Image 1 (tube, rainbow, N blue to C red):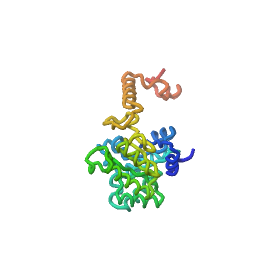
Image 2: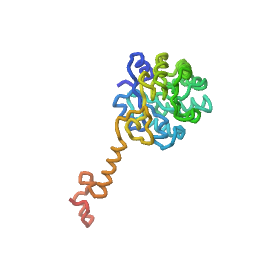
Image 3: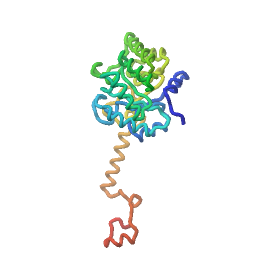
Image 4: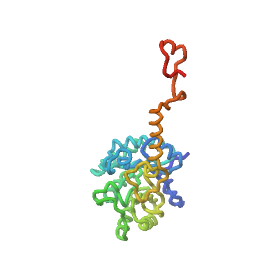
Length: 283
């Protein structure tokens, strides 16, 4: 089983094969999606919302991201593990960004993802890639820029903004990014940008024409119910499955149907006799 690398991801675009990506934040989930055959596992800063209960992605920091990244990495054999650079981990200086990217790689990530396409981000991307740290870029709607964008708004609904995002993408490509996430952009813009890049695009709410797709696993599995974005397809309803299971467990405990003999450890008769009383666990 060969490890997926940035070069493999670029080859998938050249071969016309779609790239499958999903988020994960813990060992057991990462192990499952890796064995299912996913190409990229993103340890997303979306963990701030679906794992930690914050209202936006701004609430998570490097300490939490390193913990989630190392947990996911331990569960993965094949997929490429990409870790989000959280808000505040690279804004102060290029040096800060390099240091924090190093920490995520040390934690087990195979690459880092960075939001934005300013000249500063391009410079950081080039510094990281030339020092052996692959970068997945992120354009369009960028959640870390939520306050500046004025809310959850679809991007590139017109030609001018589409051309602007393309220019950013081309600069990031030249800086060494191996791929670009396009989030919540019009399908036409995503297709236009994808056709003009040598590196793959991975869409989230960006239509069918991107080179791959990514979704938040808690949305896909129906586990996170605070809200469901328009672009998500639910493949399960774990909220109901888990709730029903816990209700059954509670009922079994209350009505003494659990535990039963097969769940119990017992003394042998000799040792039990030494206690001088009959156990409630006697058959």
